[in-house]
Image 1 (cartoon, rainbow, N blue to C red):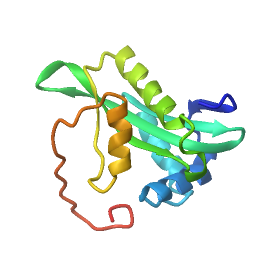
Image 2: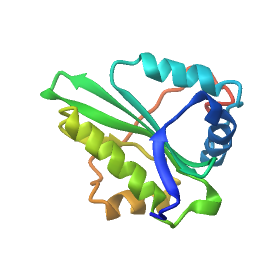
Image 3: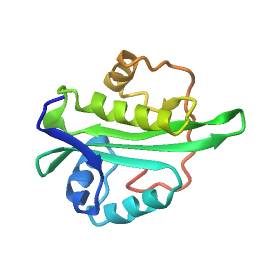
Image 4: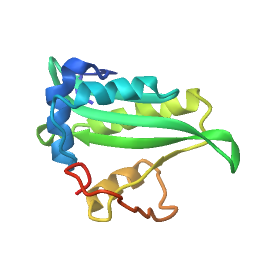
Length: 151
């Protein structure tokens, strides 16, 4: 990763950048929505929201959660969001963000890190497979209400 890129906890002031990143990922949200969402993540017992910043500009975002499981004594980690801005892709930022999640998950006793990815995101699948993630199943989703956040 480029040395000028730093990784830190996401802050409410990052909202305009996070909003743009989420739109690039296909999940539009207004900058006004982001601080409340970050606040909800802070109240979750084991959630992580990190950004990669190039100076004052946020260029990447990752979120993760650790949850208990009935089929294992150890909890599992879910990588729930990963996006790097179009102009900063291919520079190792995504890999650095994933590494931070993996370290955090291991330090918190997680058995594994799992991530879901839409079938259309072939490049993303390759990204995870290069990092030794395995295809272990399918994701099934039932959407209750169609909104801008659930295209």
